[in-house]
Length: 309
Ligand SMILES: NC(=O)c1ccc[n+]([C@@H]2O[C@H](COP(=O)([O-])OP(=O)(O)OC[C@H]3O[C@@H](n4cnc5c(N)ncnc54)[C@H](O)[C@@H]3O)[C@@H](O)[C@H]2O)c1
Image (cartoon, rainbow, N blue to C red):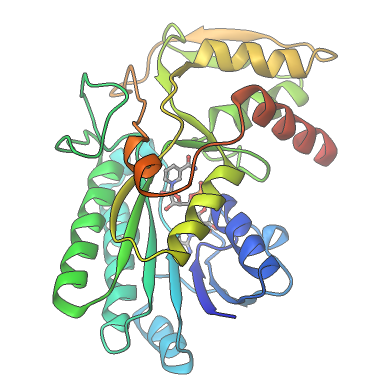
């Protein structure tokens, strides 16, 4: 049994990871300020602290009281458009929040820090698809730049203080519990709007593509990298591009009893036309592969949203 800290453990990806960690017999401590996460997501066996990762005093006291074997860092400001409107906030939460955790790990490094980075916006305006980790990342949004900075910080704390880490660059993660009120997560947004009898808004022509990865596959990768001794940066996606128009059609197929309407709106400024990440590296170096096909994942997600409606 390991003692594991999960920041952002009441959020979408964090709470699923907490469930798996607890299922596997680990002791889990969660830090979350519930800004976009929910107590109802939280596994009742987790020890919970309603704390902000920016809070130096409170975070220090958690580390004084505990010795963690592993640290998952999910807590972040994840809304790309919010990052553009208020860049300081991304810097505070995403960059300074990570520094606050790392500073406390210097004295007694855990076996590994597992960091949630982004594959969706990390590579910016590249024309190489699916995009491998080897190209120089050039994100064109503050959120992506904050995640790239975090990766650099992790590297330097590893080199200078021996804090082992892995940064997982997720594609567009989807599945049960995704917060449809936040702007990320087109699948959760479409499903919830249709259930509420509202039309789905598609920005631009809907032919923009993303690499959609089901939550269970992401949790598998998280746990695998906790257990192995690999350090560095890995894409976690499918290597498959799917358009927003296609997402609408698959969601519609699974909600055929409902009135599924879509309207097209002007494209969003700065939105990438294509995003799709190569999974060659993770496939070569580990046993991981994405198991859930898009149709199956959307079906499961629709069922979950219907069960909660
Ligand atoms: N969902 C995706 O498609 C995706 C893709 C790539 C990377 N990521 C990354 O994965 C991580 C989890 O994302 P998610 O989709 O589960 O989002 P989420 O919003 O559901 O989870 C984030 C959690 O962090 C908490 N949090 C935010 N700011 C905090 C703070 N200052 N102090 C303490 N807790 C704080 C929130 O309350 C929430 O519970 C994030 O770091 C995100 O950048 C997500």
